[in-house]
Image (cartoon, rainbow, N blue to C red; front, top):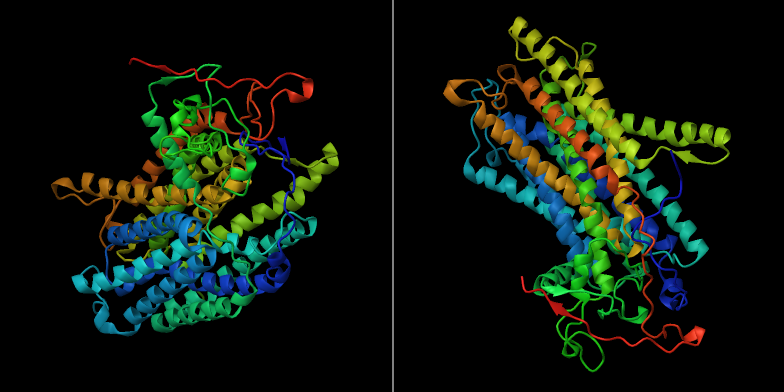
Length: 602
């Protein structure tokens, strides 16, 4: 157990409020702006989730693609969208700012979903509908080209929208005041509320229209929603606070790595001089980080090896050779979360299975409820969301309240325990999925039918376990990234989280292709691939992913868990502002800074 408050090795030094709220913060921003931003975000999420949740079914039924091809397309597209989010964050922080990045991203998404709507409405843009699986017409290369261009535009749009939507809303409040912080907390609550409403509408009403009424109408609705969201966003543009780009911390990290490589032969001592500018010269939100003793080799980037490295203003002449201790500490913060980041990738691979192979399983089960209604396969994603929501309600509203009454203070499950439970749930999810798939396939083969007589309800446990895996592991890992990073690096935390999702997508696609090639030699049926799961051994693949989860559990327990809640050692030094005089208050003369650099002959 742990108390609600946590410590981070990347603590920020206390700082005084040197600037009062700017007049712009009083004239613009606040709830007047946020109403437009939440409206824009709600319709944008409704549009994007309507496509994402049912893309597997659309490619399988309207483009006649094989299962393994569909899995590759979906995972690579998801991975590319997450990578684009990191690029979008860099462009926003360095060049365009959040407003223009959001606007251009929304326009790109509108173009992509408009093309998807055209592929559904114009039958020449896709192959003829197939009624005799697996003997279906394969799409022409130019038809796939149009499809991939649409998906590429959607990835570009995601790259502009995902890293900026919440951050732009947070920009509208003055968090230096108590009122502003309270408004920001309320904003997050309303943001997640509207996000959930949009998600429920997308996963129920729109998915049902796509599957049972018309794909053209099902894509036209999110297209109109996205166009409406852009209109709302532009209508409110005169009310927004638009913060200017202040540079990206990613470029600073690249400078540190380059400087370390250039000075790798330098040795340090107690008399080594480091470049440490004052608070007024800091770039990212004017926040100073505590100097820590981990990854000491990176501090070579801040060593002043020669006075000529500084100009007359005592600033580096070459920022790719001399960096500040602040920039070094930012890179240390990033390196400190990488071991847990690897754990997250393995957990996210399990989550991806239900969005692809899990949906394919649903297609080949009995989806009938009564005589006249069939459950759309895309609805199964609601099970994961409901399971996640139920656990959060139990945890926040029941467990914490009960423990507070017993222990007289709010007590939470430790982050390491939650991640361990999440990993175990991911293993259990794959084991259950494997057992259910074996029974589903056997019953279909006995019935000599494409679809199994077993009800789709037998798949509910694996989707629920996937949602619980997300509730325990994914939420905890995102919490770790956010709390481990200082406030000035919260965009980095989001980017690292998106990167872990992306790597999970790409790695999952790689595993699928390796297994497909390795198991299809000698004319044998592959574990994966084709149009019919009854000819495959999907359960074997699930067992393999479960084994990967076991390795992840061992890795986390014996290595990555040691990086959770790691505090600075007792000899951590607080860096002093440039304009302060060391020991002056005690009547001691200022200490002389001297150069003491030794070249390592190796």
